[in-house]
Image (cartoon, rainbow over all chains, first blue to last red; front, side, top):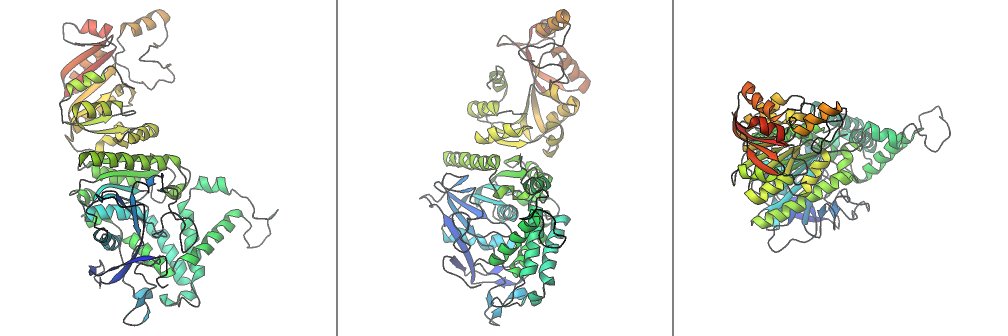
Length: 376
Length: 199
């Protein structure tokens, strides 16, 4: 995928040493912004996207022509009010929406990187994105916000740059990817690499793509984003455009048809190798280990005000894992609020219309913004 | 809801101190203390709805249960820990008191006084579990499973080996000191006991 129109790109000149040991420089970081940066430059919010997200947070995504992934939460008068705040979001490195990723051409070989692309980490992602602050001449962000992998980036960002964000909102995330999380990601990666069109990652974007493998990866992952109750209520055993079972392997059930649809639309917008790289980055994420087994030490140097949000039906990043972050912060007297939102919508709750969540997010940000202005 | 005792709690707390409000409800006391005492205050509250209200007020609150979630705070994290009229609602008040005094250098505990004459008369004449304005529930739906009197709490301090630095009784919106000589009367007239305690 080449850099397309409608994608704003910043070329990061400064060399970035990755956790894997390799150094990258002069690499593209694709980003989008919403709202206006005020005179004092104190109203900026850096939003981090999740595994399959991109920089197009809200409005119509110019590439997919669909609503941005966080349209419920971000926009004028919404939780992250773009009338008030300047929202920045970048495509993570390793991604496939314009930022440096495995679908880019290696200038040395003139071939697409594929699996020659360096393995990146959550730490590398935030170290790349912090360059946006210099670019916009922002000394301190008002907030860093993100759900799922976006939440992991929030934690890593505050840990790496303790004085660069006044507030931080990690949502439905974890400080360390669990065995179950890794297991589901491995399932997705195996589905991709088992597709013969994957060809050791050297597939040519113009011909055959490992769409089947990527679709299966998406289908499996999609199940983990929903709750059993939510699925049962939405689909139950309802049949898909038929009155009875067909005694075959077509999609008899609505849930089958739904998953197949989710898989098929996903492959149109996502690169299989990016899926491998980004899931790997999530699996490698272990902020506890980075700080020798004591998560509190990750936040010792920061005065950032935290607000942590989890969801009752999220079994991928359950409340207990979110609470461990709260506990680590309280252990060092950090300023931390926490709420678990009642929702049947599973891990995906943070992306959906869940009024209690959207209100909590809005209230926290708006009140903190007033407070921070009073102090300065 | 602004309660009568908040003024007296505020009087006990020194300016610019750090406070944890355990069972902070809708954050009314937190706001009051923030405004009047310039304290650095945190809250812990079990009800999601109440936590939401607190967040909407810009207060730092964590959703949690004092019986299990005070553990995460190190020793002496706060100058004061406040427990307003909820000690009687815990399954294990002994653990809660111990935790309050571990997490806070001092604790302020208020209790609805079950020794109040109205309560006593209710049981004596009606022969049914007392229902008063401060104890409005039926026996089968009350959250107050460990009711005690002012006298009980004083005795509790001896058994549990903590010091009562200050003890006050709230009677008709007036506050008065409780002493050894007047405890019989305060225990009969007091609607609420307010105690400043330490290890």
